[in-house]
Image 1 (cartoon, helix red, strand yellow):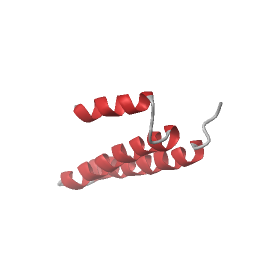
Image 2: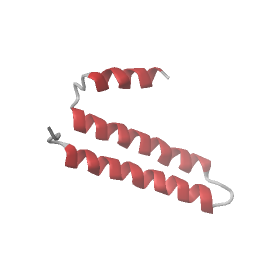
Image 3: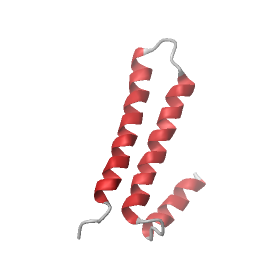
Image 4: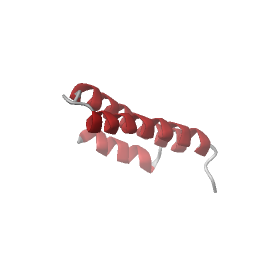
Amino acid sequence: MPHENMDDAKVWLRYAEDDLGVAKHLFNTYYPKPLSIICYHCQQAAEKAVKSLIVLYGSQGGMLKKQLKWLMRL
């Protein structure tokens, strides 16, 4: 059964991919490397990827909720 929020989740995942692409571009082309900006875009990419999962599975999350709690403890 397809998820009803799949399209919205894909949008958030594309946003995450865009942020990661910016971080890679900055890392590969700038000198000196703007590490704080690169790290910011990496953090944003991770946050948006997690948001895509929350959108897909809902805020209650079931098994996803347990996995996110585990990630937050790292």
